[in-house]
Length: 414
Image (cartoon, rainbow, N blue to C red; front, side):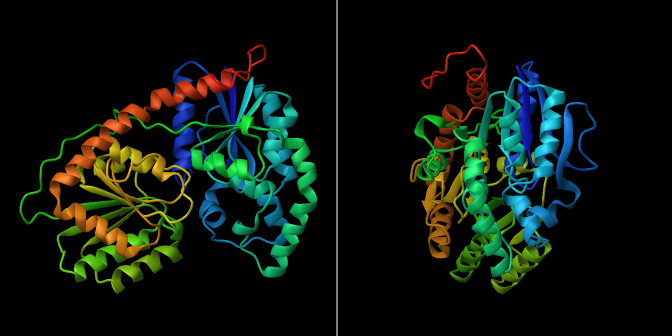
């Protein structure tokens, strides 16, 4: 197949797992013999290859300012970021004319507006849109939750969005949508999308890279090694993990160490350091910043317990599945699609989001019961291999794209 992926960020420009997953999918499709072009934002460090088109009006070299809230846009700029950008529309149309794909895959357009999606629809070839979060709904119906503006400016953008919505809906809908979880599928159905147009394809992880390692019981006095992996912002809940660690230390459970992997804005990182100092766990917590995927893999092999305290509507994250694959026990929250990967008491422990006491109690339970922790990890590893193979994930995506080719019968059962 000849495919074009249209997205906002593209490695080496990464904010979270969304970009890494997109890159892994593209790499896998190319390895299977498909031609895959990429249309994305502009950046000096983008791969210098003819099938990568950095043409969208997003300055990826200033990604922290744009995607992590480092700069407050003006009213018109906010509309262009979150609703419709004519420059992005024209750039995408020109790129697709050059590439001439058989199928256009729109992966994520957060901050890139609906302009590229409208251009893909106008191109006249089949379009499939991946929703790994709520970006499509925010741009089409309600940008309010992501508008960091003064009240008067925010009202102006929302009014303009309401006026533009009928035109955008006619240009975009109906739209073939692939949701990353049943949680996200239900969300888009509740937002008015048709059931026959939205399907769920759970992500897969490279199981050989996150190979199972049988963990022996801890030796007496050895610390329990905890791991947090994710973007450093309030929604991912690193502060909850730190406060739970502080609570356990005050209760006398001191043999705990927490490694935190992930980047964030300087302001949030500084605030998180303040929480660490406030909880008196500076000796127990290490902030590693953004790390390479290989480092995450090695930490999953060496650590005892993943804490995944996300408190936003987590669509469906790869990190818990990667940890499960290695046999690491997982404590996660019930937010969003995470319970679709973890069965409480069988393949991990689930706690309410934002509940420091519940998270601390779950960690204590696994710290004091080696047998339970090891059993959960081993069961989780089997579940990850049965349900979340990356190769099977690519198989399903391939079939989804092939069904859109001219002459192929559109069979939802496939």
